[in-house]
Image (tube, rainbow, N blue to C red; front, side, top):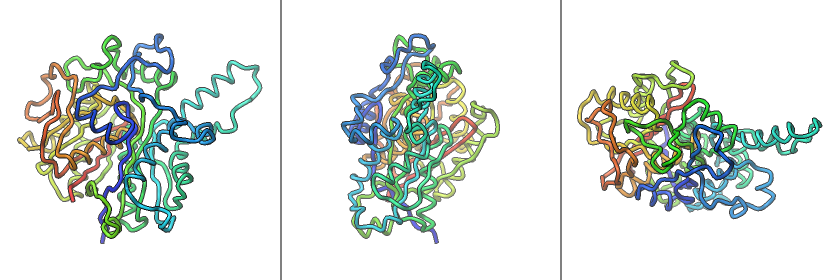
Length: 414
């Protein structure tokens, strides 16, 4: 008999808000986090814009020792997980530390650290004077390890990597471990710090990112006929997943229940999604089946929709494959229009928006879509320009990643 799994804590560090409340407030208001890159001079790149964090200083949250020995992606993980743990309202000191785990994801880990160290080496006299923290700072699993170390959690602990589906993979694994009775509480989510010259330059060279450098705030425009790529973003999202009976016994606030999650692979292309959305359709179908609902029961879908010409359309086709082009009550939005694309952290912050939509019965909008692509089926109820009041009992989050990874999570009001 599977145990029920609920969400009892949230934490967010995003380009449109450094806390969950501020993130939600700005998402509902339709605020864009995009601007010209400030961290380095982007003038040599085709794309020169990003969704950077605002007013973030590591030492505002961490002591100098922790800040010095960790990469930004771990620092972001610290901040989001600290907020989620506090939000859960639980005194973890009273728990068996082996009952609390961490499953955390990042697509790129400490790439900025590696870039900095190798660049310094290349500029030097050839002697290997690498930072002794180089390896610990770049390892992707260090985020889960350091959250554990910071809090004394001694249960299940590892990291997931599935490109832009990473955070949903982490959420799915946490869900499965708890319902199998292998943990009572798991801190899960994802963090990403990809705004460095190497990472930024790589995506720019692939022509994956928008080049609307003169109007950054309107550059991420899912479904728009003139969309030309994603706007890269940074930050983290954290969720506290908990055994339902354990949460009820302690009187915890419950945001929603995790009722289904699944993954499939496109097996189609290194970076492109399947044009007909076959793998995505199956992933959604499996997640909904596990949740005990159908697409007609879903009130809100947070789409992966990154504002790429091919990706947005393949995802809409995947949705129509499920609904058979029948009208559903489901409302859809693409919030990367505001946050940009946080890569391995995207699924975590978008899961938070799904959970807040269930709590508040408000659906955040898709901004910047001025001229809807005629290839987008008109039967899809896309929330454009402004948030809407809408009763949300079931919400679904889609994520898709390079390598053909499809990760879906379904949440339901308790």
